[in-house]
Length: 361
Ligand SMILES: Cc1cc2nc3c(=O)[nH]c(=O)nc-3n(C[C@H](O)[C@H](O)[C@H](O)COP(=O)(O)O)c2cc1C
Image 1 (cartoon, rainbow, N blue to C red):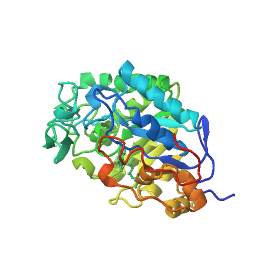
Image 2: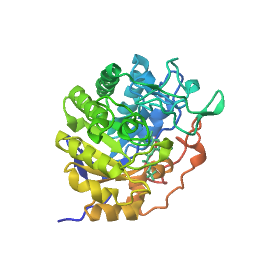
Image 3: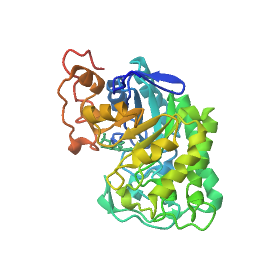
Image 4: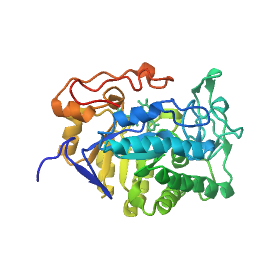
């Protein structure tokens, strides 16, 4: 069998990818008031179109899903029009782009939201910790309101509606953010899900929200092949805790395996260093591995057959032409964490491509 590396062409159902490097979803906090992506984002994503697939920054399916400062949504005509300009720019450069749905659940502060409703979560369990707000600086997370059982179909319907909107705005597919302590992971995890209805308690009940959401997104997309999911088993970020993440995630992955999803995106975090080996045999579709990869470790992972695709985040922030750099063996520009979430072009669209590699937009 020919060996596979980051620069080998790949395929996820429905289209070829020019390499096996996906750009990780990354919140960059440059959206305009009202959750509208800014014109700077057109340039930012177009600069990175040589990724095999771009997964967009976390985007709220509806305003209730916003928790952070200057983050986008996809439910108003203005937001859709702004996203369309972005997907057009990526496609004009031969790229592909999925939209990531990020409903933050309890990871929110009212000063960052443009609606007055309190954040919703599986249970009334406030996350320990603080969140940045432009108006008030660092603030404790809001205490969420627990979703009533009768409200859950409405939340799932928001993801379905947002899927329809994303495809209308030109996205090639959508990813459910079920990682990093946000709403779907709050349902999956025993620490944040204290429900006693059909959405809490047993592992079967805790995975139900994710399954029903994926099914609704797939139905809206005309098939599961345009829907991916991201998970981060045992990641402690955002004060999330699960008593038995191996049981939770093996049950989840076995349940989603027959759906025919575009891919399973797994972010490996230190508590479970062997999670790829645990989950890979349970999922026969494209397996996308992320978390701290660079060229050598990414190639080794693909070569070993332990993943089909490598998802890379931070290196894409400062190296818009990362596949070209890997191909040329060119030096990499170190990323600058101080500008990850700051407004404006600095640290966002001003990292140049390597000289001679072609023009940037
Ligand atoms: C600035 C920044 C913002 C991020 N925002 C998101 C996000 O919106 N959605 C998400 O799923 N992960 C987010 N992540 C996590 C990345 O998608 C990725 O899983 C993580 O950075 C590990 O990959 P890396 O080591 O290659 O950067 C973010 C990471 C960074 C550095």
